Image 1 (spheres, helix red, strand yellow):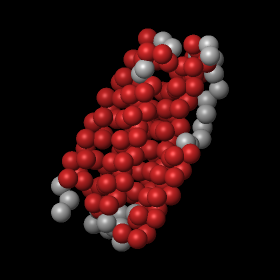
Image 2 (cartoon, rainbow, N blue to C red; image 1 turned 135 degrees about the vertical axis):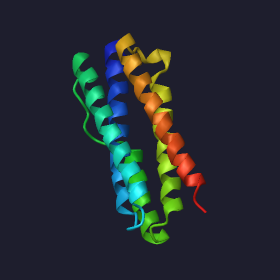
Image 3 (cartoon, rainbow, N blue to C red; image 1 turned 90 degrees about the vertical axis):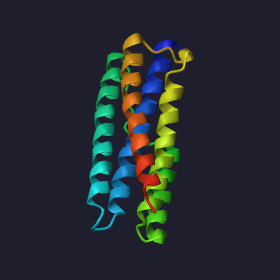
Length: 152
């Protein structure tokens, strides 16, 4: 596969998983109760961060001459469905919701780590963009993990 095509594929994969993250955090926020405004604000911020990631990645795809994928991953669809089931049966339990959010954050961390593989043919600019976003994703993961760990 040509280097440019491979890098466009990698960027589009990151767009899709960020779309999954947006949907996941939106659904998680919907599963929270009235006393969970603090957590809802965190989820809304992370969804907003991923919307910004999608914009930046979409611009990078365009600069590389590719077409932007606007969908979600198959595993992301499963992740969102599981979150809905979990919220329904857990009575909107904060810890259960945070555990599932952490699972989603683990997946996006792996996607970013994999994207930075040397064999993906990324340009210096693309690598810098992905590395910057990866740093923020890692911080988000750690925050979700800390919130989960703080639950009784």
